[in-house]
Length: 403
Image (cartoon, rainbow, N blue to C red; front, side, top):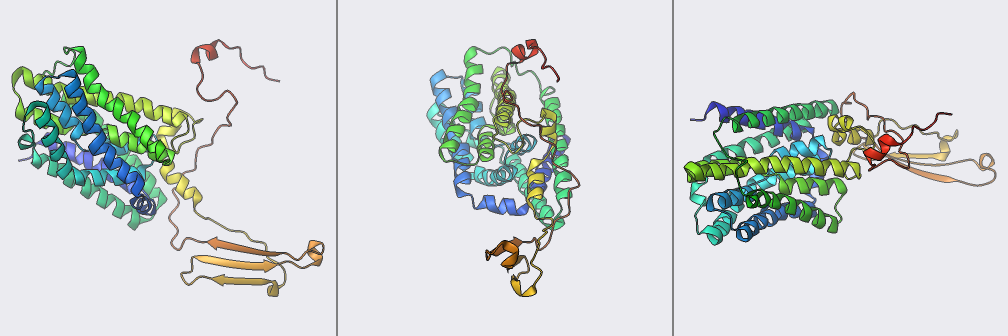
């Protein structure tokens, strides 16, 4: 029988994933499904690089079994759905994030037990797979996949930029609510002794997140992926579903060992939020996201550039000045009715003796989407000194005189 806490968490998770999925333009998702280079790299980072980092930390730091097994479970777990939320509020490539969430969730059913079977055996000769709560894993899988499917279906059916923007707000609100609910539950689950561990614990649990983030940026840059895609894959690599590790700890350990094991997902959750928050902020400031770097932080996190940039790129109206003689115009419409081909020439006397032939191809959307009603925020003009500045010297600098 599912408890109220599990039900509430799954409901919030559903609305988070549904809102993020319904934000995505269906054509953008189809384009990302063809992006084999980005998806392949995301799977490699998620299920190869991060588990290896966890294994190396366990061996090098000789962590206690309770701590080491919990860390291996964290680094072998699929990415949390919060990764969609991070990519949304910091305007990375949300379409790629949703695609990666669906794929990694499906692959985790096989790859997660396989990683745990290998790394736990060579670290502690322990069989963690039998202690996995597969019921909870399949419930989370069902919630995530159904939310993605329904969200994408709603986006395609409603066909409205306004719906995309409102769905993004729904997903963001659900994400904030889920963060608050998770913090509330973690504070009512008993003593985890998060502040009473040796230095090896804090450094060891932090290293996979930092190392994975560094490697993800190096490899995605080497592959020349688009900058928002690099940010998305870096987030997908490091942001893990720590709830699975909590479930394993409750099943495998008792007493003091349980307290040590429970501290790992709690501490990793705090670290990943802090590090990714700093990373995404820097990525925005250096121009790696879809948001302009010289707008305010509040404008950046409250504006869905994923939707508004696509809407701006759609053709709204075309004004063409044609010659006054019909014989100078040759117009043809494609069979689908979505493209107009125009060829026209100007009179010689009107062009100072030069005969000009001009061709034009205009693509019109066959089923225009409803406008969102939102405009892209104005972008302040950059000054030569704009970018990374020293706040201490800036505050001491005299104001610029007004002429």
